[in-house]
Each structure stands twice: as C-alpha cells, then as structure tokens.
Image (cartoon, rainbow, N blue to C red; front, side):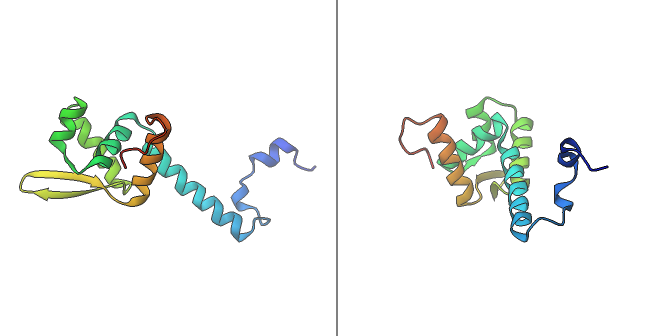
Length: 124
C-alpha cells in the first residue's frame, strides 16, 4: 500500500534520496537561521542588543537602564554570548559587552527600523 499524503509529509524529508546537495545546504542554512532567530525571540535579549548597538556597555549600566536585577541581565547576556551575538572586555572588575559582529548589528538595525523607526536609520 502506498503512503498517503499525510504519511508522506510525516516522513523525514532530510533522509530522502531525492534531495539535491543544494536543498540539503539550504536546509542547513534554514536551521542556522532558525537558531539565530530563536535566540533573538526574547524581549530582554532584544533590548540588550538594541542598547549594545548604540555603544559598549557594562553589566551595571545595562541593569540600570533596563531596571532589571543583575542575575537576569547576566543570564540573558550569557545566552547572547553563547550564540556569538556579543563579546566581552574586562577592565578591572567591570565587564563590558558589545555586539560581536556586523551581521548582528545589521539585523538589529533592520528590526529597529521596522518596529521603532519612523523610516529613519536605526541605532546601528
């Protein structure tokens, strides 16, 4: 008995022999983009990235601006660091955070333009 449409959709498409190398490559890029966007899908992380797009900031500065407790800010910064969105610099006991690369800066600029801008360039 042939598999029906529902059964065919449920099959693991990545295991199909019909996929071209280009499609497999595209699927890998989609997975990477999905992971990237999931890391951004949090209000506090987006706020942190917007603030860091303006300039490098210390954890204390970020706490004060966002009115969040230090453990909350540190947890979100740790996730952003794990994902490669931010880098750190230590000066004595103070840790400063900044955006890790231009890809993050560009994306935050686009998000800012769409949701916060009035047709002008964002903070990036």
